[in-house]
Length: 176
Image 1 (cartoon, rainbow, N blue to C red):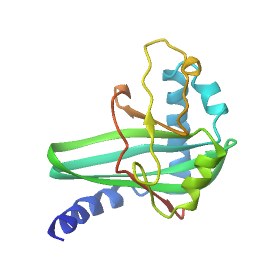
Image 2 (image 1 turned 90 degrees about the vertical axis):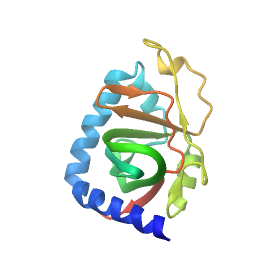
Image 3 (image 1 turned 180 degrees about the horizontal axis):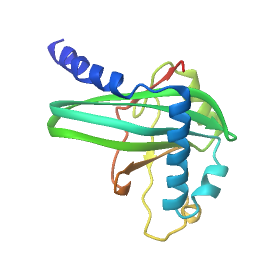
């Protein structure tokens, strides 16, 4: 219970610091989507073939021994904003400092999207897995044989990040 209280104390300032309006989320999601298309060869065609895309333009992570992360984003289907979500996660271990990242979660099938939307608080690794894709520089993502129903991409300030996991992240619909 003590650890949970510490995590809540850590996450509360993060949620207030980055709580955004619908318009702010949309503008930042547009920029993140543009960056995805620029950095991922074949990114536009890949997104066009998806059932939906969940875009978190800014996920802040902070910690000192105990850490937490929080971000707000938009679920888009057919180019339309259909719902807003928050993501939150907690961690314990060697960590100090803060970082910001962008997360793009691509639902490749309608069934994966339905499973996600039917849950109140979908947790990566429990309610479904999110495969983080790896590919070589200059390789077209559309040439990869991606069979996973949910695929994730994580960007830092320096660009696309590899060998990361979204396991343990919880995604919950919010009203905006």
